[in-house]
Length: 228
Image 1 (cartoon, rainbow, N blue to C red):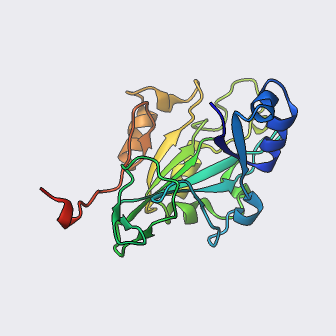
Image 2: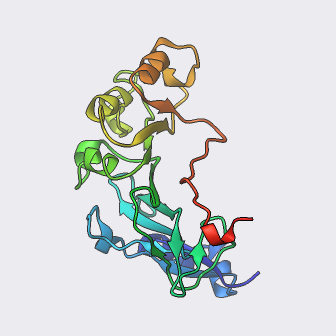
Image 3: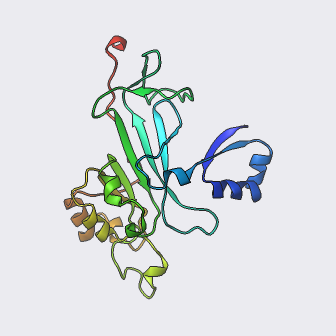
């Protein structure tokens, strides 16, 4: 297989090009690196997403976290449920991958579904744009909830393992628009235990705990002229 597009940050691109065995993939043309312009996004509302297919786009969002070898980014994935191409033909996100020109999204409140995926970050206070602002712009937010509370790691300074605290995240995002799903849970996190009081409290407050197999999709509308 040759020419497989790989989207990554400039620092990750440099790592792949400079270190074996990954360097072989670029030297032999197995992959084609597409560098993301994260300086242009950097938590900006005006950032332009990367168009992957005519109805699917991804916005890379730089987030503060460890950067020994590369950097850390979150993604906002946008899927159009009802879009048309230049000829007026309906385009669905369920179609085969089409790397042609982006389709125009038709008007309507529910035309595009946005999902924020952020499994790894330092505390929310370090973000350039407030996490509450993001969670009022997207429909679903999958957020780093490594630790449930302070003092969870016995005998270790938790400031050395920087992640948001789930209880603080839930307090900060109370009433936000997005469906918030808590993910990336450490083995010490009581949210992992299905019948724990901590999990019951989170669910009662309107939050979800991530699990394998969860799916999200926009509501699809079938064009009238294509119905049987």
